[in-house]
Amino acid sequence: MYKICIVEDDESIAKSLSSFLAEEGFSCSLAGGQREALALLAQEVFDLVLLDVSLKDGNGFVVCSAIKQRQSVPVIFLTASDDEYSVVTGLELGADDYIIKPFRPRELVSRIRTVLRRSGRGQTTVSFGDVCIDTEKGAAYKAGKDLYLSALEYRLLLLFFNHPGKCFSRTELLADLWDAAGDYVNDNTLTVYIKRLREKLEDDPKNPTIIKTVRGFGYKVGD
Image (cartoon, rainbow, N blue to C red; front, side, top):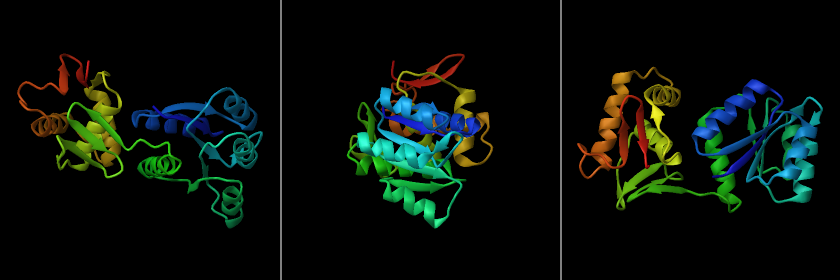
């Protein structure tokens, strides 16, 4: 699991980012300012840093400079400022990417995976049994054959595979699908997607061994 340090002084944004990235299989630690970020980065090793330019007790440029002097950790700047000076300054300090707020969460995840891959840290596949998801291509395969999943089927399967053994309630899954689709997804729709996934994944959909039902609660993959 990749460890990401989120340096963001807006607590609501930081928590929202952390929650979303956790669902994508990342482990996140939060720092609300320059001093806190430098202390955290001195104590722990991260695979990537998401760094806001404007911080209450300093700025992201100082943090980025300190990071690049000590270790080769990829840095992505997050900022509401789109002026040329900030972009150029960040890149000259060694930042690996720059994304302007507001941004779409899916775009951020894509940029994170690209930077991780470019830095030699990115894992592009996740698998369970003979089913494999290629996150770079956005496709899933069973025994090497493309499963041709819809966008929401892919999203649902990736959520399960990123958290093997975790039991998801129907409420959690509905919230995740609603966020991904941007539309309301009801309980009946979830049942349909689980059924379709099983028909594509399972050798015997009526007796599933991959996506298991936890009676009275929800579903999980793995033990």
